[in-house]
Length: 339
Picture (cartoon, one colour):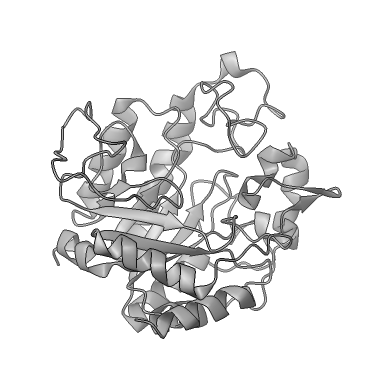
Protein backbone atom coordinates (compact mmCIF):
# COMPACT_ATOMS: atom_id res chain seq x y z
CA UNK A 1 0.00 0.00 0.00
CA UNK A 2 1.12 3.54 -0.71
CA UNK A 3 1.06 4.76 2.88
CA UNK A 4 1.65 8.36 1.86
CA UNK A 5 -1.48 8.35 -0.30
CA UNK A 6 -3.41 6.65 2.50
CA UNK A 7 -2.22 9.20 5.06
CA UNK A 8 -3.19 12.09 2.81
CA UNK A 9 -6.72 10.72 2.58
CA UNK A 10 -7.10 9.52 6.19
CA UNK A 11 -7.77 13.00 7.68
CA UNK A 12 -8.89 11.75 11.12
CA UNK A 13 -7.26 9.54 13.74
CA UNK A 14 -7.42 8.72 17.44
CA UNK A 15 -4.44 9.12 19.75
CA UNK A 16 -4.21 7.41 23.15
CA UNK A 17 -1.98 8.58 26.01
CA UNK A 18 -2.08 5.76 28.55
CA UNK A 19 0.43 4.61 31.10
CA UNK A 20 1.21 4.49 34.82
CA UNK A 21 0.47 8.22 35.11
CA UNK A 22 -3.21 7.47 34.48
CA UNK A 23 -3.44 6.01 38.01
CA UNK A 24 -2.45 9.35 39.53
CA UNK A 25 -5.08 11.21 37.47
CA UNK A 26 -3.16 14.48 37.74
CA UNK A 27 -2.54 14.50 41.52
CA UNK A 28 0.40 13.61 43.77
CA UNK A 29 0.58 14.10 47.55
CA UNK A 30 -2.33 16.51 47.52
CA UNK A 31 -1.02 18.66 44.69
CA UNK A 32 -2.03 18.96 41.06
CA UNK A 33 0.24 18.21 38.15
CA UNK A 34 0.74 20.70 35.36
CA UNK A 35 -1.95 20.74 32.67
CA UNK A 36 -0.15 17.82 31.03
CA UNK A 37 -0.84 15.13 33.62
CA UNK A 38 1.33 12.56 31.80
CA UNK A 39 4.26 14.76 32.86
CA UNK A 40 3.44 14.34 36.55
CA UNK A 41 6.58 12.41 37.44
CA UNK A 42 8.72 15.34 36.34
CA UNK A 43 6.31 18.04 37.46
CA UNK A 44 6.14 16.71 41.03
CA UNK A 45 9.67 15.24 40.91
CA UNK A 46 8.50 11.78 41.92
CA UNK A 47 11.47 9.48 42.60
CA UNK A 48 11.62 6.36 40.46
CA UNK A 49 11.45 4.27 43.65
CA UNK A 50 8.02 5.79 44.35
CA UNK A 51 6.78 5.98 40.78
CA UNK A 52 7.62 2.31 40.20
CA UNK A 53 5.06 1.39 42.86
CA UNK A 54 2.39 2.40 40.36
CA UNK A 55 3.36 -0.59 38.23
CA UNK A 56 2.49 -2.90 41.11
CA UNK A 57 -0.96 -1.30 41.25
CA UNK A 58 -1.61 -1.16 37.50
CA UNK A 59 -4.45 -3.59 36.80
CA UNK A 60 -6.90 -1.95 34.40
CA UNK A 61 -9.62 -4.58 34.58
CA UNK A 62 -11.94 -2.70 32.20
CA UNK A 63 -9.43 -2.35 29.36
CA UNK A 64 -10.89 -3.81 26.20
CA UNK A 65 -8.94 -3.17 23.01
CA UNK A 66 -11.84 -4.22 20.82
CA UNK A 67 -14.12 -1.66 22.45
CA UNK A 68 -11.53 1.11 22.09
CA UNK A 69 -10.80 0.48 18.43
CA UNK A 70 -14.41 -0.21 17.49
CA UNK A 71 -15.38 3.09 19.09
CA UNK A 72 -12.72 4.93 17.10
CA UNK A 73 -14.02 3.39 13.89
CA UNK A 74 -17.62 4.26 14.72
CA UNK A 75 -16.48 7.86 15.24
CA UNK A 76 -14.99 7.98 11.75
CA UNK A 77 -11.30 7.62 12.64
CA UNK A 78 -9.03 5.91 10.12
CA UNK A 79 -6.00 5.24 12.30
CA UNK A 80 -5.19 4.59 15.96
CA UNK A 81 -2.00 5.81 17.63
CA UNK A 82 -1.15 4.55 21.14
CA UNK A 83 1.73 5.32 23.49
CA UNK A 84 4.15 2.39 23.50
CA UNK A 85 6.56 4.27 25.83
CA UNK A 86 6.18 7.78 27.15
CA UNK A 87 8.75 9.99 28.90
CA UNK A 88 8.47 7.99 32.15
CA UNK A 89 10.23 5.11 30.39
CA UNK A 90 7.49 2.55 31.05
CA UNK A 91 6.68 0.35 28.05
CA UNK A 92 3.05 -0.53 27.36
CA UNK A 93 4.10 -3.67 25.50
CA UNK A 94 6.16 -6.77 26.31
CA UNK A 95 9.70 -5.49 25.89
CA UNK A 96 12.49 -8.03 26.14
CA UNK A 97 14.96 -5.13 26.32
CA UNK A 98 13.73 -3.74 29.65
CA UNK A 99 11.50 -5.43 32.23
CA UNK A 100 10.01 -2.08 33.15
CA UNK A 101 6.96 -2.89 31.05
CA UNK A 102 3.27 -3.68 31.37
CA UNK A 103 3.72 -7.45 31.07
CA UNK A 104 6.64 -8.04 33.40
CA UNK A 105 6.13 -5.32 36.01
CA UNK A 106 2.36 -5.26 36.63
CA UNK A 107 -0.33 -7.61 37.93
CA UNK A 108 -2.19 -6.90 34.68
CA UNK A 109 0.45 -8.81 32.73
CA UNK A 110 -1.03 -8.21 29.28
CA UNK A 111 0.52 -6.70 26.19
CA UNK A 112 -1.52 -3.54 25.57
CA UNK A 113 0.08 -2.70 22.22
CA UNK A 114 -0.35 -6.29 21.03
CA UNK A 115 -4.05 -6.36 21.89
CA UNK A 116 -4.68 -2.99 20.27
CA UNK A 117 -2.82 -4.16 17.18
CA UNK A 118 -5.06 -7.21 16.90
CA UNK A 119 -8.14 -5.05 17.32
CA UNK A 120 -6.97 -2.63 14.63
CA UNK A 121 -6.50 -5.54 12.23
CA UNK A 122 -9.95 -6.87 13.14
CA UNK A 123 -11.77 -3.56 12.58
CA UNK A 124 -9.73 -2.25 9.67
CA UNK A 125 -7.95 0.69 11.31
CA UNK A 126 -4.28 1.38 10.75
CA UNK A 127 -2.02 1.05 13.80
CA UNK A 128 0.47 3.75 14.75
CA UNK A 129 2.73 3.84 17.80
CA UNK A 130 3.93 6.78 19.88
CA UNK A 131 7.47 6.27 21.21
CA UNK A 132 9.51 8.73 23.29
CA UNK A 133 12.90 8.37 21.61
CA UNK A 134 14.73 11.02 23.63
CA UNK A 135 13.31 11.67 27.09
CA UNK A 136 13.33 8.71 29.49
CA UNK A 137 13.09 9.54 33.19
CA UNK A 138 13.70 5.95 34.26
CA UNK A 139 17.24 6.03 32.88
CA UNK A 140 20.31 7.83 34.26
CA UNK A 141 21.42 8.53 30.68
CA UNK A 142 17.95 9.48 29.40
CA UNK A 143 17.79 12.59 27.22
CA UNK A 144 16.89 16.18 27.99
CA UNK A 145 19.88 17.01 30.17
CA UNK A 146 21.29 19.47 27.62
CA UNK A 147 18.14 21.59 27.54
CA UNK A 148 18.78 23.65 30.66
CA UNK A 149 16.02 26.01 31.71
CA UNK A 150 13.88 25.84 28.60
CA UNK A 151 10.30 25.79 29.97
CA UNK A 152 8.49 22.46 29.99
CA UNK A 153 5.47 20.81 31.63
CA UNK A 154 7.68 19.35 34.35
CA UNK A 155 10.38 20.52 36.73
CA UNK A 156 12.98 19.47 34.15
CA UNK A 157 13.29 17.72 30.81
CA UNK A 158 15.50 14.98 32.26
CA UNK A 159 15.31 13.17 35.59
CA UNK A 160 17.55 15.40 37.65
CA UNK A 161 15.77 14.70 40.94
CA UNK A 162 17.05 11.09 40.98
CA UNK A 163 20.08 11.70 38.78
CA UNK A 164 21.40 15.24 39.40
CA UNK A 165 24.83 14.73 37.81
CA UNK A 166 23.97 15.96 34.32
CA UNK A 167 27.61 16.39 33.41
CA UNK A 168 28.09 12.63 33.70
CA UNK A 169 25.18 11.67 31.45
CA UNK A 170 25.74 10.15 28.03
CA UNK A 171 22.66 9.73 25.84
CA UNK A 172 24.56 7.34 23.59
CA UNK A 173 24.35 4.75 26.38
CA UNK A 174 20.57 5.04 26.72
CA UNK A 175 20.19 5.08 22.95
CA UNK A 176 22.30 1.98 22.47
CA UNK A 177 20.94 -0.04 25.40
CA UNK A 178 17.24 0.87 25.30
CA UNK A 179 15.94 3.31 22.70
CA UNK A 180 17.22 1.72 19.49
CA UNK A 181 16.53 -1.92 20.48
CA UNK A 182 13.03 -1.11 21.73
CA UNK A 183 12.14 0.57 18.44
CA UNK A 184 13.41 -2.55 16.67
CA UNK A 185 11.11 -4.68 18.86
CA UNK A 186 8.11 -2.57 17.90
CA UNK A 187 8.94 -2.81 14.21
CA UNK A 188 9.42 -6.56 14.24
CA UNK A 189 6.73 -7.80 16.61
CA UNK A 190 3.50 -5.86 16.02
CA UNK A 191 2.61 -6.24 12.38
CA UNK A 192 2.23 -3.43 9.89
CA UNK A 193 2.56 0.04 11.33
CA UNK A 194 1.24 3.03 9.42
CA UNK A 195 3.45 5.39 11.41
CA UNK A 196 5.66 5.86 14.43
CA UNK A 197 4.97 9.08 16.30
CA UNK A 198 8.22 10.29 17.81
CA UNK A 199 8.40 13.17 20.28
CA UNK A 200 10.63 15.80 21.89
CA UNK A 201 13.97 15.64 20.04
CA UNK A 202 15.91 17.50 22.71
CA UNK A 203 19.16 15.56 22.83
CA UNK A 204 19.35 13.47 19.66
CA UNK A 205 22.14 14.28 17.31
CA UNK A 206 21.79 13.81 13.58
CA UNK A 207 23.30 10.32 13.62
CA UNK A 208 20.74 9.18 16.23
CA UNK A 209 17.80 10.40 14.16
CA UNK A 210 19.25 8.92 10.98
CA UNK A 211 19.87 5.54 12.63
CA UNK A 212 16.25 5.40 13.76
CA UNK A 213 14.97 6.51 10.38
CA UNK A 214 17.03 3.84 8.60
CA UNK A 215 15.97 1.19 11.12
CA UNK A 216 12.29 1.88 10.51
CA UNK A 217 12.71 1.79 6.73
CA UNK A 218 14.72 -1.44 6.97
CA UNK A 219 11.93 -3.39 8.63
CA UNK A 220 8.87 -1.43 7.48
CA UNK A 221 9.64 0.61 4.36
CA UNK A 222 6.11 2.02 4.16
CA UNK A 223 5.92 3.12 7.79
CA UNK A 224 5.83 6.92 8.10
CA UNK A 225 7.73 8.96 10.68
CA UNK A 226 6.82 12.39 11.95
CA UNK A 227 9.08 15.43 12.11
CA UNK A 228 9.58 15.13 15.87
CA UNK A 229 12.14 12.43 15.22
CA UNK A 230 14.42 15.42 14.77
CA UNK A 231 17.32 16.53 12.58
CA UNK A 232 15.37 16.56 9.32
CA UNK A 233 14.72 12.80 9.25
CA UNK A 234 10.99 12.34 8.67
CA UNK A 235 8.17 11.66 6.23
CA UNK A 236 5.50 14.03 7.50
CA UNK A 237 5.21 17.11 9.65
CA UNK A 238 3.71 17.17 13.13
CA UNK A 239 2.51 20.68 13.84
CA UNK A 240 2.57 22.02 17.39
CA UNK A 241 0.31 20.56 20.05
CA UNK A 242 -3.24 21.72 19.29
CA UNK A 243 -1.92 23.98 16.51
CA UNK A 244 -4.57 25.30 14.12
CA UNK A 245 -2.84 27.39 11.46
CA UNK A 246 -4.65 29.83 9.22
CA UNK A 247 -3.07 28.29 6.14
CA UNK A 248 -0.12 26.33 4.80
CA UNK A 249 2.09 28.63 2.72
CA UNK A 250 1.65 27.75 -0.94
CA UNK A 251 5.35 28.30 -1.68
CA UNK A 252 6.53 25.88 1.02
CA UNK A 253 9.30 23.69 -0.32
CA UNK A 254 11.16 20.80 1.26
CA UNK A 255 14.80 21.39 2.10
CA UNK A 256 16.88 18.31 2.91
CA UNK A 257 18.94 20.23 5.43
CA UNK A 258 15.80 21.63 7.09
CA UNK A 259 17.35 25.09 7.02
CA UNK A 260 14.28 26.88 5.78
CA UNK A 261 10.96 27.40 7.48
CA UNK A 262 8.15 29.54 6.14
CA UNK A 263 5.75 31.26 8.54
CA UNK A 264 6.80 28.81 11.24
CA UNK A 265 6.18 25.75 9.08
CA UNK A 266 8.64 23.00 8.43
CA UNK A 267 8.12 21.72 4.89
CA UNK A 268 6.94 18.16 4.29
CA UNK A 269 8.66 16.15 1.54
CA UNK A 270 5.31 14.65 0.52
CA UNK A 271 2.86 17.39 1.50
CA UNK A 272 1.76 15.47 4.61
CA UNK A 273 0.75 17.35 7.76
CA UNK A 274 -0.93 16.47 11.04
CA UNK A 275 -2.10 18.24 14.18
CA UNK A 276 -2.31 16.15 17.34
CA UNK A 277 -4.81 17.68 19.72
CA UNK A 278 -6.51 17.26 23.07
CA UNK A 279 -10.19 17.52 23.95
CA UNK A 280 -9.43 19.14 27.29
CA UNK A 281 -6.02 20.50 28.35
CA UNK A 282 -4.22 17.25 29.17
CA UNK A 283 -3.04 14.29 27.12
CA UNK A 284 -3.03 11.77 29.95
CA UNK A 285 -6.05 11.19 32.18
CA UNK A 286 -6.60 14.12 34.53
CA UNK A 287 -9.56 13.88 36.89
CA UNK A 288 -9.63 17.61 37.73
CA UNK A 289 -9.42 18.82 34.13
CA UNK A 290 -12.99 19.18 32.92
CA UNK A 291 -12.23 21.91 30.40
CA UNK A 292 -13.71 19.99 27.49
CA UNK A 293 -14.14 21.37 23.99
CA UNK A 294 -17.72 20.82 22.90
CA UNK A 295 -18.62 18.77 19.85
CA UNK A 296 -19.30 21.86 17.76
CA UNK A 297 -15.81 23.18 18.42
CA UNK A 298 -14.14 19.84 17.66
CA UNK A 299 -16.11 19.54 14.41
CA UNK A 300 -15.11 23.08 13.41
CA UNK A 301 -11.44 22.36 14.06
CA UNK A 302 -11.60 19.13 12.09
CA UNK A 303 -13.25 20.85 9.14
CA UNK A 304 -10.69 23.65 9.12
CA UNK A 305 -7.67 21.35 9.38
CA UNK A 306 -8.92 18.86 6.83
CA UNK A 307 -9.73 21.72 4.48
CA UNK A 308 -6.03 22.60 4.48
CA UNK A 309 -4.99 18.98 3.99
CA UNK A 310 -3.96 18.54 7.63
CA UNK A 311 -4.89 15.36 9.47
CA UNK A 312 -6.60 15.72 12.85
CA UNK A 313 -5.24 13.27 15.43
CA UNK A 314 -7.54 13.64 18.42
CA UNK A 315 -6.40 12.38 21.81
CA UNK A 316 -8.10 10.49 24.63
CA UNK A 317 -6.49 9.80 28.00
CA UNK A 318 -8.09 6.65 29.44
CA UNK A 319 -8.28 6.32 33.22
CA UNK A 320 -6.32 3.85 35.33
CA UNK A 321 -9.00 1.19 34.94
CA UNK A 322 -8.89 1.34 31.15
CA UNK A 323 -12.01 3.42 30.55
CA UNK A 324 -12.53 6.35 28.20
CA UNK A 325 -13.93 9.39 30.03
CA UNK A 326 -17.65 9.70 29.40
CA UNK A 327 -17.20 13.31 28.24
CA UNK A 328 -14.84 12.14 25.48
CA UNK A 329 -17.29 9.53 24.30
CA UNK A 330 -20.20 11.96 24.22
CA UNK A 331 -18.21 14.61 22.34
CA UNK A 332 -16.90 12.20 19.69
CA UNK A 333 -20.31 10.62 19.11
CA UNK A 334 -21.76 14.07 18.48
CA UNK A 335 -18.93 14.94 16.11
CA UNK A 336 -19.52 11.67 14.23
CA UNK A 337 -23.05 12.79 13.43
CA UNK A 338 -21.61 15.69 11.43
CA UNK A 339 -19.35 13.53 9.24
